[in-house]
Image (cartoon, rainbow, N blue to C red):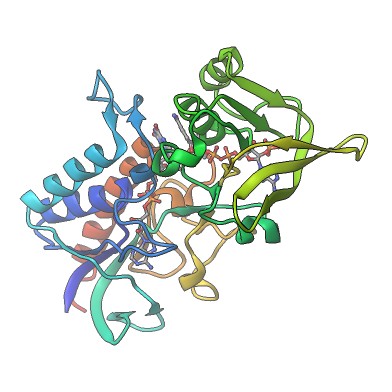
Length: 316
Ligand code: FAD
Ligand code: NDP
């Protein structure tokens, strides 16, 4: 039986692994197996430069940073396995985790399953998925179909700004479609996007439909003015969804307390969930800050909370 199992391999999971390894808990971390929904290394694997993580004055790419996180956790004895947890039983201790046909038991659990990119839910997004529809400019932006062509990014947060700015390296023009008249993004990112000569802001607009055909994939989008309801089509060869993320908590439905949007609820100032011995860290329990540094910080908190909880419950 494991002392602690960590689920998730973003900044929160690796930091929890680093701290719990240094506390001699010999943690086992499941990083997830690459699939449509799972990205080992987490959200930063989809980004280029991370400029705001302290300690990297010249910046660092997301994948490079996650490789460093992983190495540092392994250096102190964290064991990392490429498995996705498919179900959990937290009704009794030791806790049970299932990955396919394998079962694992642990005295304590740290959940760091993060969040996943959202789409608008249009059938046309599905139709043209990977044929012009994407949620990752870093992964797909350099593809020939996007070069020197107009592209569309939907959303008004930091992700939308970052995706749009990145895409200007390839595109002839990038339309940012936002449903309000002000971006949610941090001022520095919004100002950078607005000042970019290749970026056009389509304010107060939503995407009604992604347009395309069988042969070419995406050829445009139909925009709808939220005030007048008037629609118009704009040409593009790519449509990038950047409207935020859904916490990866389906596994824990009916088991752990969640808020109305599915984020795990932790006790204020700690990483304790409603089940004793189960802790949550990172974006999976943070709808406010959702940054690498805050995820790493709460991973550290979870490892410390968990270590102390294990010490207090040694008799079990
Ligand atoms: P995540 O990074 O989401 O990692 C969750 C992990 O859990 C993944 O490894 C996944 O594979 C795994 N997982 C999920 N379910 C399971 C399961 N059932 N079994 C096993 N494993 C599972 N923040 C910044 O501070 N600076 C930036 O510049 C920045 N840029 C960003 C750019 C983009 C495009 C995006 C999307 C986000 C960016 N962020 C940035 C936010 C930052 O990436 C997140 O706040 C951070 O990654 C959250 O870390 P996390 O460990 O909580 O979760
Ligand atoms: P956010 O939740 O911050 O923003 C989502 C955006 O999409 C909002 O503008 C929202 O509109 C819009 N939106 C949501 N749903 C819909 C919908 N159904 N139709 C149309 N528009 C919709 O998510 P992000 O992914 O941008 O950012 C998440 C976190 O990651 C943030 O904390 C951010 O700071 C961080 N991050 C940091 C980066 C950096 O520092 N460089 C880079 C990328 C992300 P509305 O505003 O009207 O709600």
